[in-house]
Length: 217
Image 1 (cartoon, rainbow, N blue to C red):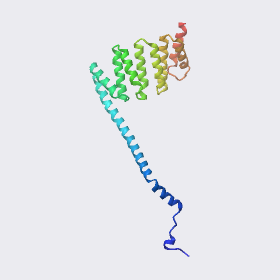
Image 2: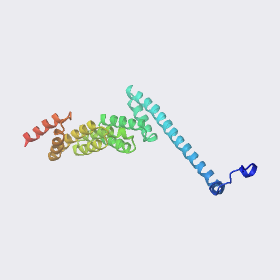
Image 3: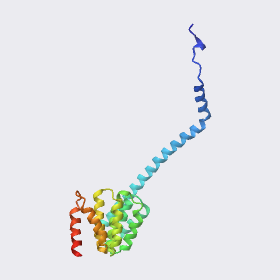
Image 4: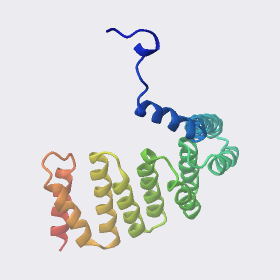
């Protein structure tokens, strides 16, 4: 016979009751978990927004300093760049400011000062700017008459370079400065390796340098 009324209703299962009871029992933990997730998401957004604001303000400050540099007002440009490298360290504009400040020092023969600026800034610089900063650092060491230190800086630049051609170029520069420092064996090893890379645009030059080294012996 067909059941009607209360008899027709499905009997609650133990599983359903267990789920309801579990939710009630863990309601506080669930609420706390939801709050933690929400706060985490909000915190991530705030951090990203703060980073964007920092980059924007640093870029504005760098544009002002660069304008002073381009107009020939080096004392003002240097003062502004020093403030940027300190206040906005780690930003793209802060790293560019450090590079320009170092170049100003190098142009005036103050190699130690420029090297110190770059060494302080490069470790926190955005990764896409580090290789160029290290290459500039190498140039400072060369200007100071320290080709071995320049070679070490070029090696660091090659290690962090993001593109193969850049890595090969920095290695070629390293070989050149190694040779200038008297490390002919080190230079020969790099030139030999690059000369054997058939599709390298530096292979031809590497072969020429190898020939020069052999001829000089």
